Image 1 (cartoon, helix red, strand yellow):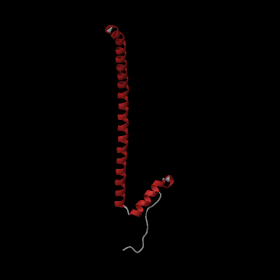
Image 2 (image 1 turned 90 degrees about the horizontal axis):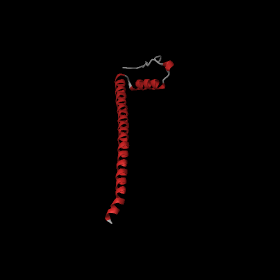
Image 3 (image 1 turned 60 degrees about the horizontal axis):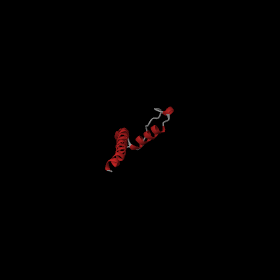
Image 4 (image 1 turned 180 degrees about the vertical axis):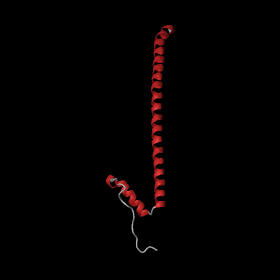
Length: 103
């Protein structure tokens, strides 16, 4: 009686092994491309953040340089005019002020 039972069990075992193998192959085929795209997205995000930080550092250095050369009120006026982006007025404004009673 044991032998016929094993013959009925054999196709079930083979089908379970086949399903297990196929599901593992599908898992491997989907895992590695997804991991690659996640790594690429992470690298792109990291590069973007690094570029933004670099840009912010450069802007701070430029502002310190500008403030080391010009008085603060003149520098702020120039920055406001540049940020206004009036293309027809570009390079037409003179930032000279006359002061009386200067010792």
